[in-house]
Amino acid sequence: MVKRNQKTLHRQIEFQTMSTKAISCFEQTEKTRNRLTHRTVEIFAPPSNIDSRWVGVRSIIKIFRWGTRGNHNYESDSATYYISSLPPTSSRIPQGIRRHWGIENRLHWVKDVVIKEDTSPQLHGKASTNISLIKSWVINLLRVHGFDSMTEAISKLSHNLPLLLSFCH
Image (tube, rainbow, N blue to C red; front, side):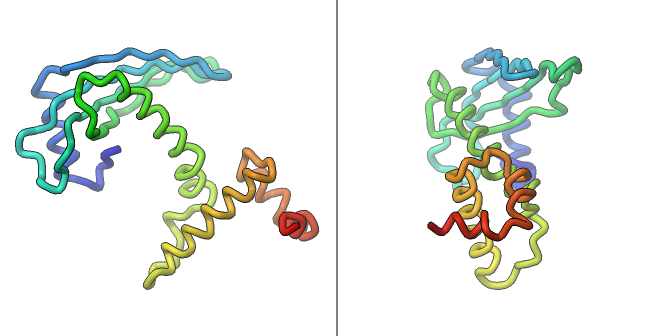
């Protein structure tokens, strides 16, 4: 995924997707629980002037989402961009991105939102890397012990030392 903090690459991709025609386009509809999501996945050739650090990029992907959550319609406020080493005609691109979202939702979102990793004060030396590894280990440990919700796990374990120590057996 190309985020806005990669300013040059993000701008190049935005320009490329606005100024050229997509090579491939996929439409997807997914229904889960109370959510119906439609996605348009457009795949482009990479810009000719792409930075040399991105050697091997063969595809630029633009995704736009809209749908309903409960009784409310929603539309994503902006496109989401990805780069890929797969050719622009590959039918594997949409599935690969969908799998990436699964990882993003089960790990990175939990670390960013629930555990607030981005606001962690440990910034010196290897502290932030070490703390991040410990947090990933704890998330995995909680999932192995049946917790799907990290918020629920934190709530149940925060004042229950015997339950927490039972993980050690």
